[in-house]
Amino acid sequence: MDTAIDINFNVTASQKETIGLRASENGFDDISAYLKVVALKTQAFTLTPAGASTGEASVKLGFKVTESQKNQIEEKMKESGCEDLTSYLQYVALHAVVTAVVEVRSTGSFDAMLERIAKAKSNS
Image (tube, rainbow, N blue to C red; front, side, top):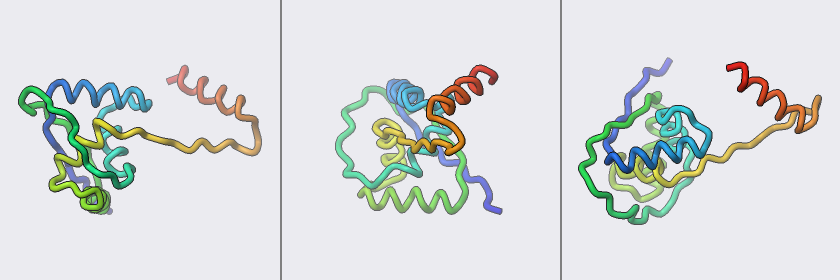
């Protein structure tokens, strides 16, 4: 069993606010879960200047991964030409869009599936 590894990086207060909005826009209630997904699932990209941010990067964000997930993140970082993990994580957290594949069960219609999801959300 893999041991959990903490990955942490600092962002400015305005970047944290933007990341929180991105997480919410993508359906995440928890920033840590969003960070983990975008770090693991974002395709290779060309790093472009993310725009100047004002202020000190003093807000700590982080998430837990396994050793193999950490290696996967580092490989994606290298494929994208990023020099360090912090730059990679800041970029994907600020710019990634999470996509999901919805599978419709053969035993029901798409509308029935949406009703089940809505019902499950209202019960939680």
